[in-house]
Amino acid sequence: MIDFIGILTRTWLGVSAPAPSAQITTAPLVAAPTAGATAGSAATPAPAPAAKVDASAVVDNVQKFYAGIKQVTAQFRQTVTNSTFGSNKTSDGTVWLMKPGKMRWDYVEKKKGKVQVKKSFISNGQYLYVVEHDNKQVVKKNLSNDLMPVAVSFLYGKGDLKAEFNAALDTSGKYGDKGDLVLKMTPKKPSAQYKALYLVVAPDNYRVKQSVIIDSSDNTNQFRFFAPDFEAPIKDSYFEFNEGSVKNYRVIDADAQGSGAGAPAALPPPK
Image (cartoon, rainbow, N blue to C red; front, side):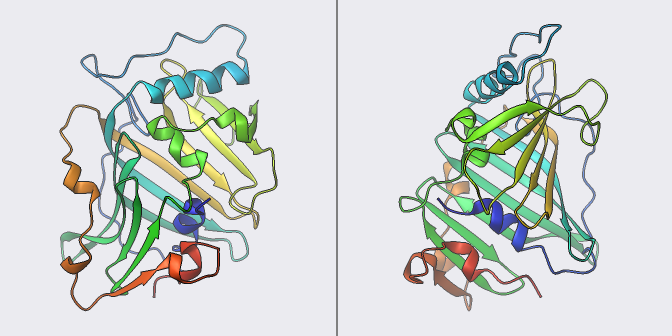
């Protein structure tokens, strides 16, 4: 299984100071995966939670919510905390998800008053490309050899969270807002990708407002999702990447490395 969670975490660790981030809309999600829906949204709200909340039922309703959507565009803010040095790295960007299994994450930064894409994760469901513009490097991974982890794939309706995690309700108040449902998902098998996965869930329709990943080294990778849109058309071409479109970039075939560890081994922290 491809360590996509590890890629998203490790590519930002080791950076002592946050890069300038583009301004994003910070209105809370109103319907979905990372996003929320309006009255005209294609997403169908799940039933309202019962007075006595059960973790298993919450997980079922979260998966039902994402199984019912076809696509979503949302802004995100990612905060990665290095447990060793206590440093934080905050990044902003836009994510696009479309069934079956297509996704794109564009990380942006402001330079000289202009918003520029710094890094992209692009997948058409068959290949994953990690495009690093600062390093002029592209890493290519065949997803037929390594599947996306359920912690990612459930966002586009694939995988079974219960099959890989034990779920419990977290009432510590550490994550989420008052009234939110917070799931603590603990892997049934030891995993280097995550020691625990927290999902902050809206109680009205079971959308995920935040996801927090704690890895085996106690580093924290938190995503907050904003301004979701389920209706805006997304072209299939947006999930394709042409290796010839970036001249003078080094292209690394992660499958040819022979390490068996997948893409993360080929991804140094950004300089």
